Image (cartoon, rainbow, N blue to C red; front, top):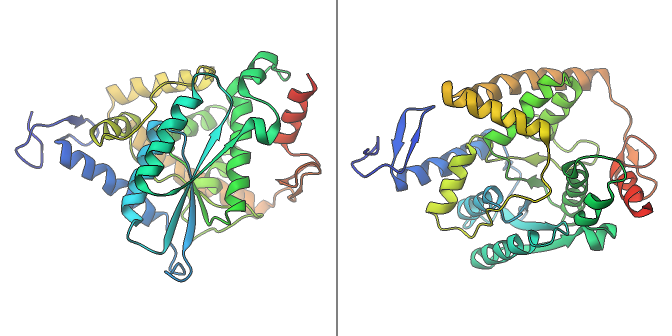
Length: 321
């Protein structure tokens, strides 16, 4: 099959658009969508100048999504002195998994010449995920612990680097799954929080309660296209799945979405288009109604609405076993 835009052989077919794309047009298509999202979300404000640049902290795991995001952002802003990229890798302490992905992170950041910080659960919390999974004092899925710990370290180091934005590699599938899960759970407040955290444009909202704004520039790109991009661009990627990944509900939603997308191309895009509009309305409602006052955690000083933040409660529970 020939590329829709030229006579070269196509490497992929996007059923949702009807396009067949060759290697060069496919790579350009992904680049264009990421850069369009950066513009539409107003990530780079007019106030950023070569004399007063913005620092963007990128969560780099070594997986396909974060590697592709880091590579595209680097090439986009390599010659733009208004943006400085810093990559942060979190080592969870998962034997035989994170060490391999860390090697991919180091290869990429060395090749691109960007600053790379590595932090670990062992150093920060005196625990490792292998031990958390074995003890499991709260009887929760491993991802529930890990998500809290990871988000805490991303926020902490974004603050330490005085970062203006915190960027993660969530793709279209990730976001559509989260959107559908929030709807199916009837969790309107979480819908509002999801919007305020990473879906609304930055010209409409800035820092909130001391939290550094997050962005997801890959959220218009399907997961399979991210994987193909990494392969065609010959990027150093660790493709293995986390051995502790066990979010049963997300897995069911993922299977449902893949089935719907196969039978009705464009379903993921449609879900996100409608969800973002609804989430914006929900976010406005919760802001107008007021939220619980945000203070500081008694143990670590992180923003929280209670006396002790969720991360510290989980760390205390694990270390008490």
